Length: 335
Image (cartoon, rainbow, N blue to C red; front, side, top):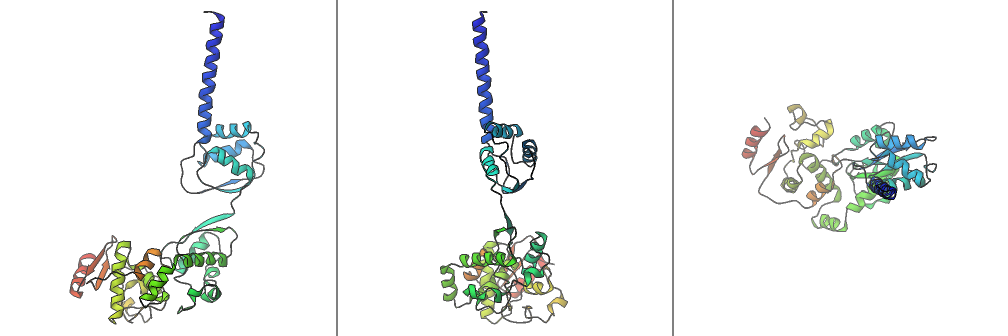
């Protein structure tokens, strides 16, 4: 075979190899890793490119250590990566490098407050997240008097507690945020969710916002299914109008800090304004911090012929028109 032809074939093979490698390399640096949400990544001072790439790979933030290192060296950025704590979402190596060399350190954390949590639950969560040292750091601040002047919707509350107003949601806050800063974020969010249309509807129905929040908190605890909440709201508002006791277990569980689906005879005798078997009307305060679904159900109840309901152990709501029918349902589903 002529020498020139051999050289040409070899040169062609080299070009093909380089082309394949280039395509593979571009694919590696432009492909995102497979994870969801956010992950914290720390680069300490003095770490070199090998250590950083190894840590990124082990934490699933890049798919190829070689591609990451090669990209840095080709761009002559191997000495430009900044130390710090980063909150990273899925991104390709190109975008990741931009963040790491710009030193865009994330000084925020995410806090998630769940629908139905009480102030006590939130305080315990903040302790676990190391935002506060003890529960009273939050509970002593979660008082209406501390925020009344800034939020008109707090003016007509029956209590000084912010129970009911800490809107359940995910919040981004600075790592050194104070308890007051966190509460302000939740109240701002509550104010945003309380749209003019909702305020108008509450007023048109002749109810106060605080009473709606109390009802919503009961619905949040009593009914797990969003679709059933409007029916249960209709039942409970109807009982109030008929001067009937609400007879809901969740209000007493708020006092006892229990989670019994069915109260004991001893618990039913507890003398408390939260005992809705013993006293008519709404309890004096919300019993948790309800989410948007429960609040809307309290504002927009659904009328029906039902007077009674119960929640089964698997979360299904059973409705009854008469007490006799309800008692049969209790025997069938709860005994």
